[in-house]
Length: 266
Image (cartoon, rainbow, N blue to C red; front, side):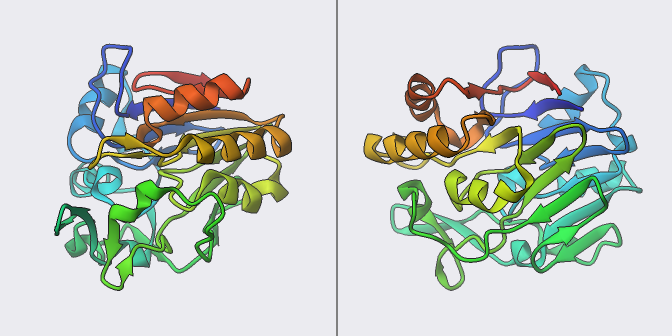
């Protein structure tokens, strides 16, 4: 299995950084895009790495925010074969509250009826290699205050539109987008698969206030992951934020970062 970070907030390579996420994943049977980023950055960076987006057969959009699915229209113009798996609820309106204003950050609802979209309402087994799961109820355990600026039509977002991917090959791999439901809660649901690797954002940084979450929360997360999942390698990115990553990495030997352009061979 090969995982290439094509869109991420930071870069140590020739690829262009952008606020958002897109991971290109090759398995024995699939060419996958997990999230698409906000704009054309995905396609420009893929071209630099010689990755042909038209050959992708599976897309997973982790949740209904534009920094993860904003490039969907362009992708569908380029690729006419991939199945795009997304929770139906992801196409509901979503907002980020900036001071007293709610700014729309949702997906393009006009794409809901596109023939390539597979609209889900909960967990889904794609095949014996790929499974999608949700965290069905928001838990206040390890709740990130960075979520407080995010809303839907009902009020503060409960993230029922968020899904995570399990890839089963020679090792079990967990891929998540922002981890709004909490990395500990997501890992607890995924524990039955015993993932050897977890890749994704932890949403521990508020891009509006530019503040990280309290160290007390980071201490709790580190203790839980270190205690229960010491054999899992964690590669975080995107919405975790550098201060939170640096803190977690000081307290966990198995915490790493995957920047734009980085490749993991599994």
